Amino acid sequence: MSSAVRAVIVHAPHDLRVEDFALSAPGPGEVEVRIERGGICGSDLHYYHDGGFGTVRIKAPMVLGHEIAGTVSAVGEGVSRVAVGQRVAVNPSNACGRCSYCERGLQAHCLDMRFFGSAMRFPHVNGGFRERLVCTEAQAVPVREGVGADVAVFAEPLAVVLHAAARAGSLAAKRVLVTGCGPIGALAIIVARHFGAREIVATDVAARTLGIARSIGADETLNVGADAAALDPFKADKGRFDVAFECSGHKSGVADAIATVRPRGTIVQVGIGGAEMPIPINAVVAKEIDLKGTFRFYEEFEQAVDLLGSGRIDVSPLHSATIPVERAKEAFDLASDKSQSMKVQLAF
Ligand SMILES: [Zn+2]
Ligand SMILES: [Zn+2]
Image (cartoon, rainbow, N blue to C red; front, side, top):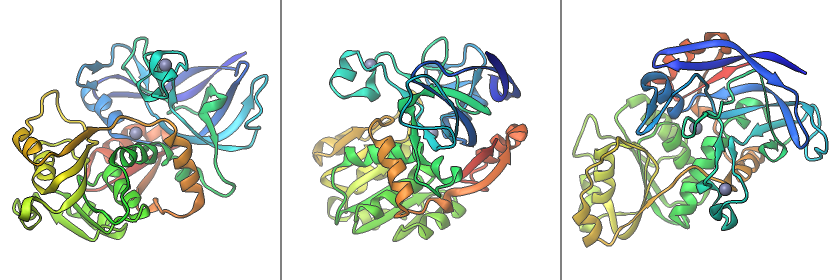
């Protein structure tokens, strides 16, 4: 049995269409989810504006979206974790479980990863911006009773940040810098606060964004666009911060982090920039800075769902607008305007 559902499909840069997309019934071990909310992410915007990023390019039309939550609408044979009517956050990450990285517990580096809404492999893996989708039972993560899809849909970006925090090590009593306060930087502030950071300083170039950063727990916010010297006091004595989350992907953010992290401090590079990024490498050497990459997440997805369900963090200040899926183009344009929005959600 197969039918069609409405889906947000990118055909080429600035060619985004809401069209019918085939849906087949869930097979053994699979779950059909009626999607309620989809969060528009930076990577979705890269596909929309540029047709991709770095070497990742759209070679065929692809359904976008990897931040998705909804309610189970059908289950295949043998499914026991969820039943029809259960609200779930859908984990977009589906590792093979058999390759050398999966065997070592490094599923984020799976050699055969199928990640929703990603053009990294071809044929592309279609994403979750569609009325219904079929995923594996393991990908449908139950959310606590009473947690809305508008909250559950934050599980994916929160998982990204929980993984970045795991790369940083303990944040308790640490002085933390966050450069770039889009949705990921904002979640880094929330997570650093949650894990007991002693001081959180956040930078951005947009006043509105910095206002949100303050409201969610940054002790100090600095507009490095308006005042390039704003971080100078933090460079004294070889640097003040124990940990920096570089979330801007901009060379000035990287340079700021290197200049203000203390010797033997840690920088977690979360933002992705262009193919080539100038790095003041001598300071990394002389200050013995631990400069670490972070990529997606694995077990952190379930932790993120738990944390959102616990009510111990509040992500609602990041949610700027909800727009019906038929107006997806408008939603993508709004999400692209950082002066007006943080996280824009599609409603299905
Ligand atoms: Zn995302
Ligand atoms: Zn694998």
